[in-house]
Picture 1 (cartoon, helix red, strand yellow):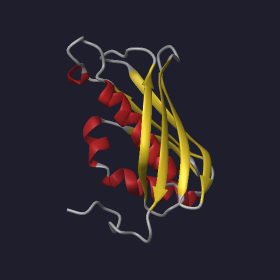
Picture 2 (cartoon, helix red, strand yellow):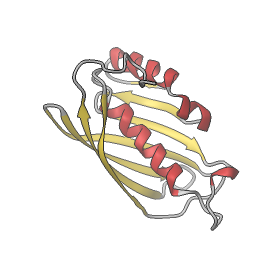
Picture 3 (tube, rainbow, N blue to C red):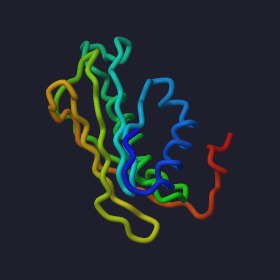
Picture 4 (cartoon, one colour):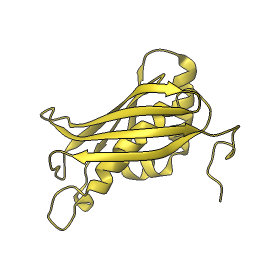
Length: 148
């Protein structure tokens, strides 16, 4: 992971990533974390395609949503998605290395607005744009983990 900014943010992001079973299962790597910003990457596997033989949009959304989660949780309190929208701009294929960069656009009170750009690393093509609205929960309702 690239070290920039606040060490507390890095420690928090690394701890979050250690508990993120979905990211681990899909090979999603945490590359950068700083206040209000995160970069994650994932190589699209052969079994991540849809019936058309192109990358399933759900995986692209999941990568963008994960980057969004790391960016909006960089301040410490438990923050979750309130709404999210994605626009798919180009198809992706197995073997493509994708990177999602989440950037905070606004944060006011308990809500935030984040944009995530998903690119294909090989050629730098923008393959998707994602916008997420976050809400910070009161206290730490999950104790760092989701309820069961």
